[in-house]
Amino acid sequence: MNSILVVDDENSMREFLEILLTQEGYQVTLAENGEKACGILDESRFDLVITDIRMKDIDGIGVLKKAKSVDPAPTVVLISAFATAETAVEAMREGAYDYIPKPFKVREFKEIVKEALRSRKQAESGEEDRLKSRYHFDCLIGESPQIKKVYDLIKRVAQTKTNILISGESGTGKELVAKAIHQASQRNEKPIVTINCAGIPENLIESELFGYRKADGGTVFLDEVGELTPAIQVKLLRVIQERTFTAVGGTEEKSVDVRFVSATNKDLEEEVINNNFREDLYFRLNVIHIPVPPLRKRDGDLPLLAQHFLEKYSNELGKEIKKMSAYAMDILAQYAFPGNVRELENIIERSVALETSNIVLPESLTLSDYKGTLSRKGRRRLDLGSDGINLDEAMAEIEGDYILKAMETAHGSKQRAARLLGITMRSLRYRLDKLGLKSSSDDDF
Image (cartoon, rainbow, N blue to C red):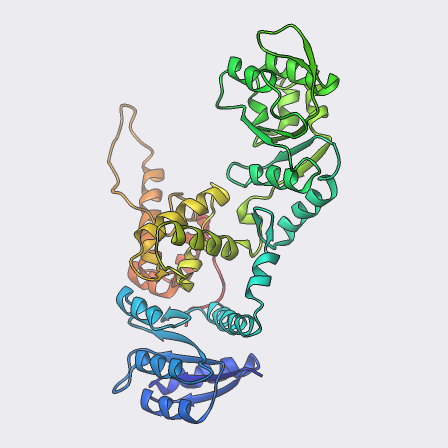
């Protein structure tokens, strides 16, 4: 049974946390101030310390420093109704696991406690590196059931010669799937040649496909294959069927041994129906179909991907940012990510560049999508245009801006946001649902 020391000078908060944590199966010890907590830490050992920051005499930072001086040092989570970026920075620099502003959501608080204890156990048993490797498949990251299906398909088809079609929204990582297939195949010692069918003029696509043989024995990855012109579709079909081609400017036919892996964000079946894509080519490319799920449907992968990009850009930018704050992750979890994993990477890179502490705080997040975002920047420009406007739509958009700004200011707390807007919680939940934001029945504490 994990042991937890709770430190808070408010009796009601101590009692609440004791009931909550005891119900979760933890052994709980209470301390009514920092001085008492430091004395308890001298005599007993704990897995986790949860302490308020603002207390008389010895504050939460003092308790944190004391906890880090004992052996073995417990994990420490700080909570406060006076959350500021400065105190969060100081707490994280002193070694706190996380910093939680009040009021907090009970469900999210319990998740933070579980994650803090899980992280401690992994560190003690040396499982951290092994767990990280479990989240990876070549260059792919994730452990959700949805992405595991992709891993399974890659393993099953990589060793075959079969052509593969990868489908999915923009930014889902289709090229990474193609590279994973190549690396897991017997062709991995030969090159994988990537051709962006949407970004190269017709004459250059022909040159890329048929002008030389550097892909012989390897893999040709046709990105956005749905953008191929009808003329190139005919030539590509011939290469796939005959395994021969005639080099640009030449007359001699040459044989070629390549596997075609294609990717598209279009519905190629619909493109065939609309006569925009050859049906015979579609069937040749789509022998095996691997659909890549959007980020919003990859249950549980968001924290893993965010941490991966955080470590990547912290290293690249020479910073020592080690983790995302719980409330920054809460904002990300409520975002729709229309740009999928690519957009998440961009958000994290920008956050790391802007962040001045060693933890990503909500203030460093800038999300660009309208629906689902809790952070928007820029001032509205009033423009009636030549034909006027729809006033109802304009007012709805302004209302949305205020609601999203209130949620951002309240760090995701619906109670605080409702107070800022002068409306009821029920009204706020209704309006959040209209904006496409996730709304929970859990009340804030």
